[in-house]
Length: 271
Image (tube, rainbow, N blue to C red; front, side):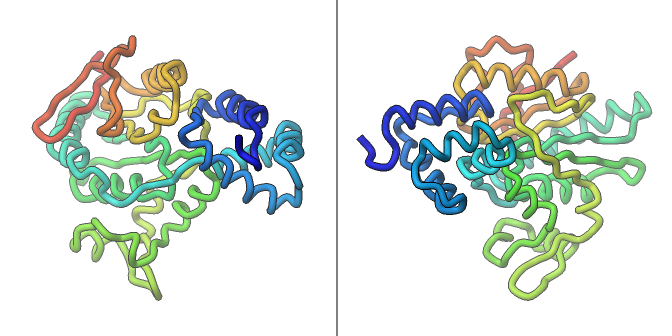
Protein backbone atom coordinates (compact mmCIF):
# COMPACT_ATOMS: atom_id res chain seq x y z
CA UNK A 1 0.00 0.00 0.00
CA UNK A 2 1.26 3.50 -0.83
CA UNK A 3 2.17 5.67 2.13
CA UNK A 4 1.00 8.79 0.29
CA UNK A 5 -2.17 7.60 -1.45
CA UNK A 6 -4.25 4.92 0.26
CA UNK A 7 -6.19 2.41 -1.82
CA UNK A 8 -9.39 4.19 -0.83
CA UNK A 9 -8.01 7.58 -1.93
CA UNK A 10 -6.74 6.07 -5.18
CA UNK A 11 -10.19 4.69 -5.99
CA UNK A 12 -11.82 8.06 -5.22
CA UNK A 13 -9.42 9.93 -7.51
CA UNK A 14 -9.60 7.28 -10.20
CA UNK A 15 -13.41 7.51 -10.28
CA UNK A 16 -13.40 11.31 -10.21
CA UNK A 17 -10.91 11.58 -13.08
CA UNK A 18 -12.83 9.00 -15.11
CA UNK A 19 -16.19 10.66 -14.49
CA UNK A 20 -14.86 14.09 -15.40
CA UNK A 21 -12.64 13.23 -18.36
CA UNK A 22 -13.02 9.59 -19.40
CA UNK A 23 -9.32 9.07 -18.64
CA UNK A 24 -8.62 5.76 -16.90
CA UNK A 25 -5.88 5.32 -14.30
CA UNK A 26 -4.90 1.72 -13.60
CA UNK A 27 -2.68 0.39 -10.85
CA UNK A 28 0.11 0.36 -13.48
CA UNK A 29 0.18 4.17 -13.72
CA UNK A 30 -0.74 4.86 -10.11
CA UNK A 31 2.72 6.32 -9.44
CA UNK A 32 2.15 8.97 -12.14
CA UNK A 33 -1.07 10.04 -10.43
CA UNK A 34 0.65 10.12 -7.05
CA UNK A 35 3.53 12.32 -8.23
CA UNK A 36 1.16 14.81 -9.94
CA UNK A 37 -1.06 14.98 -6.85
CA UNK A 38 1.95 15.64 -4.62
CA UNK A 39 2.76 18.65 -6.80
CA UNK A 40 -0.79 19.99 -6.45
CA UNK A 41 -0.77 19.52 -2.65
CA UNK A 42 2.41 21.59 -2.48
CA UNK A 43 0.89 24.30 -4.67
CA UNK A 44 -2.31 24.50 -2.63
CA UNK A 45 -0.63 24.13 0.79
CA UNK A 46 -2.77 21.13 1.70
CA UNK A 47 -1.53 18.27 3.85
CA UNK A 48 -3.38 15.18 2.61
CA UNK A 49 -4.88 13.72 -0.57
CA UNK A 50 -8.26 13.68 1.21
CA UNK A 51 -8.12 17.45 1.76
CA UNK A 52 -7.21 18.04 -1.86
CA UNK A 53 -9.98 15.71 -3.01
CA UNK A 54 -12.51 17.80 -1.06
CA UNK A 55 -11.11 20.93 -2.74
CA UNK A 56 -11.43 19.65 -6.31
CA UNK A 57 -14.96 18.44 -5.62
CA UNK A 58 -15.94 22.02 -4.71
CA UNK A 59 -13.68 24.12 -6.94
CA UNK A 60 -14.24 23.64 -10.69
CA UNK A 61 -11.16 25.68 -11.58
CA UNK A 62 -8.90 23.55 -9.41
CA UNK A 63 -10.52 20.46 -10.93
CA UNK A 64 -9.41 21.73 -14.36
CA UNK A 65 -5.89 22.29 -13.02
CA UNK A 66 -5.79 18.78 -11.60
CA UNK A 67 -6.97 17.20 -14.87
CA UNK A 68 -4.33 19.27 -16.64
CA UNK A 69 -1.63 18.01 -14.29
CA UNK A 70 -2.45 14.30 -14.60
CA UNK A 71 -2.49 14.19 -18.41
CA UNK A 72 0.66 13.22 -20.29
CA UNK A 73 1.72 15.70 -22.98
CA UNK A 74 4.13 13.84 -25.24
CA UNK A 75 4.31 15.23 -28.76
CA UNK A 76 6.65 16.49 -31.46
CA UNK A 77 6.55 18.04 -34.93
CA UNK A 78 5.79 15.58 -37.74
CA UNK A 79 5.26 12.77 -35.24
CA UNK A 80 4.53 9.53 -37.14
CA UNK A 81 5.46 10.84 -40.59
CA UNK A 82 3.39 8.21 -42.52
CA UNK A 83 0.20 9.91 -41.29
CA UNK A 84 1.31 13.18 -42.84
CA UNK A 85 2.37 11.38 -46.01
CA UNK A 86 -1.18 10.00 -46.23
CA UNK A 87 -2.56 13.49 -45.59
CA UNK A 88 -0.45 14.97 -48.41
CA UNK A 89 -0.79 12.20 -50.99
CA UNK A 90 -4.27 10.81 -50.37
CA UNK A 91 -6.55 12.88 -48.12
CA UNK A 92 -5.89 16.37 -49.43
CA UNK A 93 -6.19 15.46 -53.15
CA UNK A 94 -9.49 13.66 -52.44
CA UNK A 95 -10.88 16.58 -50.43
CA UNK A 96 -9.75 19.16 -52.99
CA UNK A 97 -11.51 17.29 -55.81
CA UNK A 98 -14.64 16.92 -53.67
CA UNK A 99 -14.73 20.58 -52.72
CA UNK A 100 -14.13 21.81 -56.25
CA UNK A 101 -17.43 20.13 -57.14
CA UNK A 102 -19.31 21.51 -54.14
CA UNK A 103 -17.80 25.00 -54.39
CA UNK A 104 -16.71 24.97 -50.74
CA UNK A 105 -13.05 25.94 -50.82
CA UNK A 106 -12.31 25.65 -47.11
CA UNK A 107 -10.61 22.70 -45.39
CA UNK A 108 -11.66 22.33 -41.74
CA UNK A 109 -9.41 20.39 -39.39
CA UNK A 110 -9.67 19.42 -35.74
CA UNK A 111 -6.54 18.46 -33.81
CA UNK A 112 -8.07 16.84 -30.72
CA UNK A 113 -5.66 16.36 -27.84
CA UNK A 114 -3.24 18.81 -29.45
CA UNK A 115 -0.96 19.13 -26.40
CA UNK A 116 1.58 21.95 -26.88
CA UNK A 117 0.68 22.59 -30.52
CA UNK A 118 3.27 20.69 -32.55
CA UNK A 119 0.60 18.62 -34.33
CA UNK A 120 -1.69 21.49 -35.44
CA UNK A 121 1.30 23.56 -36.55
CA UNK A 122 2.57 20.58 -38.56
CA UNK A 123 -0.85 20.32 -40.23
CA UNK A 124 -0.91 24.09 -40.85
CA UNK A 125 2.49 23.99 -42.58
CA UNK A 126 1.35 21.18 -44.85
CA UNK A 127 -1.92 22.94 -45.73
CA UNK A 128 -0.10 26.21 -46.46
CA UNK A 129 2.31 24.35 -48.71
CA UNK A 130 -0.04 21.98 -50.51
CA UNK A 131 -3.45 23.65 -50.89
CA UNK A 132 -4.27 25.43 -54.18
CA UNK A 133 -4.28 29.25 -53.98
CA UNK A 134 -8.09 29.45 -54.02
CA UNK A 135 -8.37 27.29 -50.90
CA UNK A 136 -8.33 28.36 -47.27
CA UNK A 137 -7.99 26.29 -44.10
CA UNK A 138 -8.96 26.58 -40.47
CA UNK A 139 -7.72 24.38 -37.65
CA UNK A 140 -9.25 23.94 -34.22
CA UNK A 141 -6.69 22.64 -31.73
CA UNK A 142 -8.16 21.43 -28.45
CA UNK A 143 -6.82 19.91 -25.26
CA UNK A 144 -7.75 19.36 -21.63
CA UNK A 145 -4.43 20.91 -20.53
CA UNK A 146 -4.61 24.70 -20.22
CA UNK A 147 -0.84 24.84 -19.69
CA UNK A 148 -0.23 23.03 -22.98
CA UNK A 149 -2.70 25.26 -24.84
CA UNK A 150 -0.86 28.37 -23.66
CA UNK A 151 2.40 26.99 -25.13
CA UNK A 152 0.59 26.32 -28.40
CA UNK A 153 -0.91 29.81 -28.52
CA UNK A 154 2.50 31.38 -27.93
CA UNK A 155 4.00 29.34 -30.78
CA UNK A 156 7.55 29.50 -29.40
CA UNK A 157 9.66 26.33 -29.28
CA UNK A 158 13.20 25.83 -28.02
CA UNK A 159 15.91 24.53 -30.34
CA UNK A 160 15.48 20.97 -29.03
CA UNK A 161 11.74 20.99 -29.81
CA UNK A 162 11.95 21.78 -33.53
CA UNK A 163 13.61 18.47 -34.44
CA UNK A 164 11.77 16.85 -37.36
CA UNK A 165 10.74 20.02 -39.18
CA UNK A 166 12.07 19.99 -42.78
CA UNK A 167 14.58 22.78 -43.39
CA UNK A 168 12.44 24.45 -46.05
CA UNK A 169 9.46 24.60 -43.67
CA UNK A 170 11.61 25.84 -40.80
CA UNK A 171 12.92 28.70 -42.92
CA UNK A 172 9.51 29.56 -44.32
CA UNK A 173 7.31 29.36 -41.24
CA UNK A 174 9.59 30.12 -38.25
CA UNK A 175 11.80 32.97 -37.08
CA UNK A 176 14.91 32.11 -35.05
CA UNK A 177 14.88 34.01 -31.76
CA UNK A 178 17.27 33.65 -28.83
CA UNK A 179 17.29 29.96 -27.86
CA UNK A 180 14.41 28.87 -30.04
CA UNK A 181 12.01 29.44 -32.91
CA UNK A 182 8.84 31.53 -33.14
CA UNK A 183 6.00 30.38 -35.40
CA UNK A 184 5.11 33.11 -37.90
CA UNK A 185 1.74 34.85 -37.79
CA UNK A 186 0.51 33.29 -41.03
CA UNK A 187 0.36 29.90 -39.26
CA UNK A 188 -0.82 31.21 -35.89
CA UNK A 189 -3.81 32.86 -37.59
CA UNK A 190 -4.90 29.51 -39.06
CA UNK A 191 -5.29 27.86 -35.65
CA UNK A 192 -7.79 28.40 -32.84
CA UNK A 193 -6.52 26.85 -29.61
CA UNK A 194 -9.44 25.93 -27.38
CA UNK A 195 -9.95 24.14 -24.07
CA UNK A 196 -12.08 21.04 -24.60
CA UNK A 197 -12.80 17.90 -22.63
CA UNK A 198 -13.46 15.03 -25.06
CA UNK A 199 -16.05 13.67 -22.64
CA UNK A 200 -18.39 16.39 -23.96
CA UNK A 201 -19.68 17.44 -27.38
CA UNK A 202 -17.31 19.97 -28.94
CA UNK A 203 -20.06 21.80 -30.83
CA UNK A 204 -17.94 21.49 -33.97
CA UNK A 205 -19.60 20.42 -37.21
CA UNK A 206 -18.61 19.79 -40.85
CA UNK A 207 -15.01 18.97 -39.96
CA UNK A 208 -13.11 17.48 -42.92
CA UNK A 209 -10.15 15.98 -41.03
CA UNK A 210 -9.81 14.92 -37.40
CA UNK A 211 -6.47 14.06 -35.83
CA UNK A 212 -6.86 12.37 -32.44
CA UNK A 213 -3.67 10.39 -31.96
CA UNK A 214 -2.50 8.61 -28.82
CA UNK A 215 -5.46 9.91 -26.82
CA UNK A 216 -7.89 6.97 -26.95
CA UNK A 217 -5.35 4.78 -25.13
CA UNK A 218 -6.16 6.69 -21.93
CA UNK A 219 -9.87 5.77 -22.16
CA UNK A 220 -11.69 2.52 -21.47
CA UNK A 221 -13.87 0.92 -24.18
CA UNK A 222 -17.06 2.75 -23.22
CA UNK A 223 -15.37 6.15 -23.17
CA UNK A 224 -13.56 5.39 -26.46
CA UNK A 225 -16.86 4.54 -28.14
CA UNK A 226 -18.47 7.75 -26.85
CA UNK A 227 -15.56 9.86 -28.15
CA UNK A 228 -15.62 8.18 -31.57
CA UNK A 229 -19.39 8.74 -31.86
CA UNK A 230 -18.91 12.43 -31.05
CA UNK A 231 -16.26 12.66 -33.75
CA UNK A 232 -18.76 11.19 -36.22
CA UNK A 233 -21.27 13.90 -35.29
CA UNK A 234 -18.65 16.62 -35.74
CA UNK A 235 -17.40 15.43 -39.12
CA UNK A 236 -18.59 16.22 -42.64
CA UNK A 237 -19.54 13.59 -45.22
CA UNK A 238 -16.46 12.04 -46.91
CA UNK A 239 -14.19 13.16 -44.07
CA UNK A 240 -11.13 11.48 -42.54
CA UNK A 241 -10.08 10.40 -39.04
CA UNK A 242 -6.48 9.78 -37.95
CA UNK A 243 -5.86 7.94 -34.68
CA UNK A 244 -2.58 6.73 -33.14
CA UNK A 245 -0.70 3.93 -34.90
CA UNK A 246 -1.11 1.76 -31.79
CA UNK A 247 -4.85 2.51 -31.60
CA UNK A 248 -7.66 0.81 -33.51
CA UNK A 249 -11.43 0.88 -33.95
CA UNK A 250 -11.37 -2.87 -34.62
CA UNK A 251 -14.17 -4.59 -32.71
CA UNK A 252 -15.88 -1.30 -31.92
CA UNK A 253 -19.43 -0.77 -33.17
CA UNK A 254 -18.69 2.32 -35.24
CA UNK A 255 -19.84 3.71 -38.58
CA UNK A 256 -16.34 4.66 -39.73
CA UNK A 257 -14.79 2.68 -42.57
CA UNK A 258 -11.22 1.42 -42.28
CA UNK A 259 -9.04 2.89 -45.02
CA UNK A 260 -5.63 1.46 -45.96
CA UNK A 261 -3.57 3.79 -48.13
CA UNK A 262 -0.06 3.30 -49.50
CA UNK A 263 1.25 5.46 -46.67
CA UNK A 264 -0.81 4.81 -43.54
CA UNK A 265 -4.08 3.42 -42.25
CA UNK A 266 -6.90 5.75 -41.24
CA UNK A 267 -10.69 5.91 -41.10
CA UNK A 268 -13.33 7.60 -43.24
CA UNK A 269 -16.86 8.85 -42.70
CA UNK A 270 -17.88 7.57 -46.08
CA UNK A 271 -21.39 8.94 -46.59
